[in-house]
Image 1 (tube, rainbow, N blue to C red):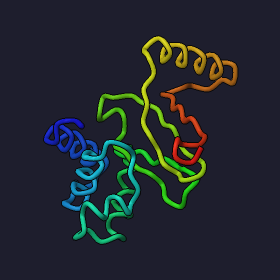
Image 2 (image 1 turned 30 degrees about the vertical axis):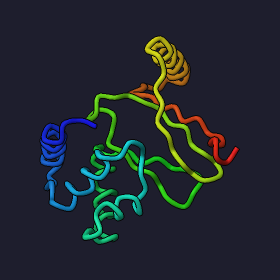
Image 3 (image 1 turned 60 degrees about the vertical axis):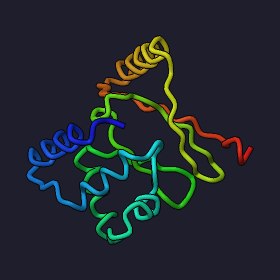
Image 4 (image 1 turned 90 degrees about the vertical axis):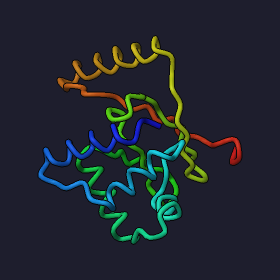
Length: 147
């Protein structure tokens, strides 16, 4: 979890740059994501914020995703999972996604492996005449509970 004031200031600046406001509802959604130790679903956010209307939370999540502040993770369950974007947390990580229950867990890899992933993705991109901005690594399988 990063410092709340720094996070809110950074997000407010990003949204202002896109002509959007950083509303109380958006702050509540960001606070819920920042408190979580893993990517969370909309129902998880609503449990933390019972006063937040579901339609408002969903709309704000969609707008925060579009602004590049929040990342959406698609799983095999009926809910997307959400987290604050890496560039705001300063903590690059990857995900383990369960194909049975849809749970999502964060994991990090050693710096040397990150460099190899960057190198390999750069080679693939050059071969296809693409320009890579960043990478994501999602490992898909079964969690310990569902295995």
